[in-house]
Length: 144
Image 1 (tube, one colour):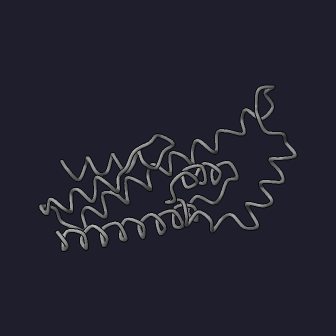
Image 2 (image 1 turned 30 degrees about the vertical axis):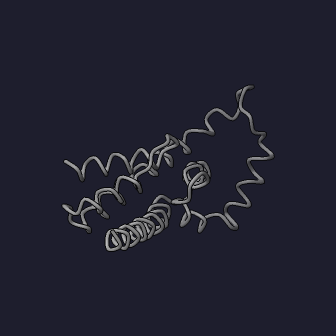
């Protein structure tokens, strides 16, 4: 049940909603009753799936671009798309970053990054981040 809780916390953390899966994971490591690779897998899968939701939401955003209330001009969208396609695809490796990471995954959907590329880049970045969190947490536990 605890692994499922971590999964859902990580899922929520990947969306635009606030949450902190790193703190949950660190607390679980400190408690010491959990298998580390299952913690990593639960957090990584949850967080990547949350990013997939963001990607899907991004694919839906441009349906509204012809509406009066839509806040971005067609010219700005084209310019942003050119920039993202030139430099931004590999920025998805940084989808784990606070504040900018979640919107990056939405942008990936807006500009229709090939889903398999999106999934690989986001999973690599987020998997590495949770591996670092585990290493930090295990190091902290050793100090306590």
